[in-house]
Amino acid sequence: MSNGSTVTDFTLLAFADTSEMQFLHFWLFLAIYLAALLSNGLIITAIACDHRLYTPMYFFLLNLSLIDLGSISTILPKSMANSLWDSRVISYVGCAAQVFLFSFLLTAEYCLLTVMAYDRYIAICRPLHYGTLLSSRACVHMAAAAWGSAFLDSLLHTANTFSIPLCKGNAMDQFFCEIPQILKLSCSHSYLREVGLLGVSLSLAFGCFIFIVLSYVQILRAVLRIPSEQGRHKAFSTCLPHLTVVSLFISTIVFAYLKPPSTSFPSLDVVVSFLYSVVPPAVNPIIYSMRNQELKKALNKLIQSVVFQQQ
Image 1 (cartoon, rainbow, N blue to C red):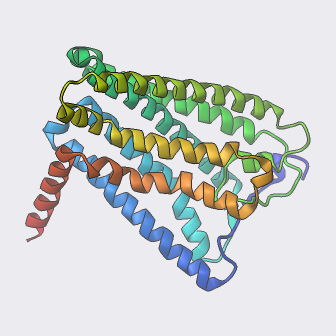
Image 2: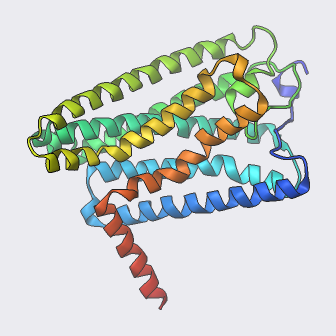
Image 3: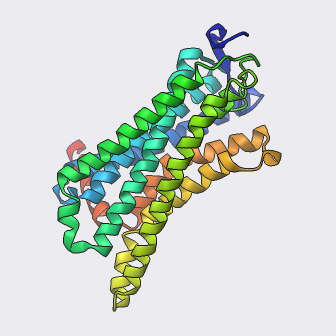
């Protein structure tokens, strides 16, 4: 293959060789997908319908649930369809769309988690200025900045990746299309532009990481100054779900992309990719609703209203 235009499709890595295991894989992914759709959908509906949740924290949580719905819908349906129909093929256009959407939503989630760290910092360290610094307009602008910057970053990476000549076949050691796997198929030295863009993105990601760490250092200092133990527990409990989600997100991403080459082999890469692409969207709603009493009440009210309407 002389260049990317001669590639009409890509071959993805299958989870299993036998039809029985592929069928099991289909049902497992279907259960995870339906659980993610239900949990994220409930959170979005509860926040949208309950006026008591019209606060910056829940506005950002609604955006996070939308991102989780989009990211898991980008990956799982195609993988389930391939397992069900015993296929490993994805079209060139489909692969490009998957790369763009997944990288867009992954970047948007990271940007939004950074904004949510700022929200928790203002709520605990500067509570008297919370309404001013996080007004409705400011929240919309910050969410729009997260979505917009992620869109531009993903557009640049996708356009650059699929303009690189491919001369090493079309088989990827992954169950979905991602940029590192496509770069492995590129010709010698033709991938350096994308490596440069990845370096810029990593620098920005590191900047966001430092911002999150510094925010939580200030939050911890403020919490420790609270005189009562009950007050300290209440303040920190509002940060615990966000801190858990950030830790899960960053740890899986770092292990997936920054692990030593000597530890990289297809089976491990697939497991790690599953952890950062499928697990967070499925468990994020559980993490946020587990200790949040206001969200629990809104979800119970929503479920009860649906049940009573059906009766």
